[in-house]
Image 1 (cartoon, rainbow, N blue to C red):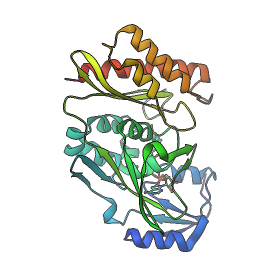
Image 2 (image 1 turned 135 degrees about the vertical axis):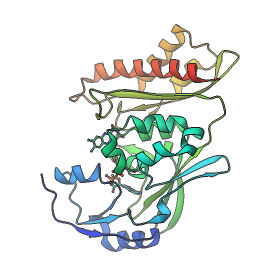
Image 3 (image 1 turned 30 degrees about the vertical axis):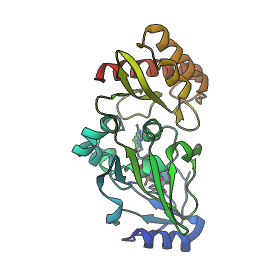
Image 4 (image 1 turned 180 degrees about the vertical axis):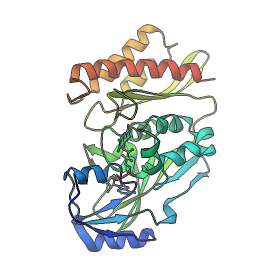
Length: 287
Ligand code: FAD
């Protein structure tokens, strides 16, 4: 399929991009790596009259440590996340998750900003950002604001971004030394979106789970934070009964669609299994 006609704009600053989006109105969309937007345009599920390409804006690049947070520019690609020593040492689950996205060709173009701003429940980064307690910086005609990932996702492809705003960076708290982590993703084949996936970050003390956070991908209209599932394992040694409890608590908040990846019952079933596997692997990694 071929996209509908559109005008292409390439600003070189955030201010110019915001100005352009304000001038062009509802029919303009920011373009990042294009690996979600362009396929939608080819299917005519999106028909913007204007694309405002963010690729020329140097300020949207960079991965820096700012005190106890890691700040990642929106236009950092998944490939650049994989290559970053800072990410590998401070937020290793981000590296693990990026490696499970699609294939190298997609990862060379796809950006963290596009992945989290897209609002597709099948994207892997939103559930991880919920698990990590990430915050997003949005800039628009009314200035800059910070929105917690937990407040950002409102429905499939529906987020807290207001018209004319751009997501400029993602800020993640540095994880405690010795934490355990795992992103378990069931997919039909390499390069596919998740049938079900779970992110776990935890700490252990004296052989028991001290803190835990669990996120779920593609198991509802938005990424989910599975608070009750996490609470079910805190203070336990992750014995079988606690793992089962966590899986059931996670299943209770899942409402996946039935699609080519399976009917809802199947996806909930394997979603619980992803939670159990991620918990076990995270605990094995923790020191
Ligand atoms: P774009 O496609 O350019 O933009 C996506 C949307 O976000 C658009 O609506 C755009 O207007 C908006 N947007 C982009 N950047 C910003 C910003 N800074 N501020 C505000 N709005 C913005 N993803 C996964 O997570 N897991 C997978 O397994 C996976 N598999 C894939 C397989 C294939 C074959 C393909 C083609 C893609 C796959 N993807 C997958 C999607 C890929 O990761 C995309 O790159 C990502 O979803 C969107 O990032 P992007 O930079 O390409 O954004």
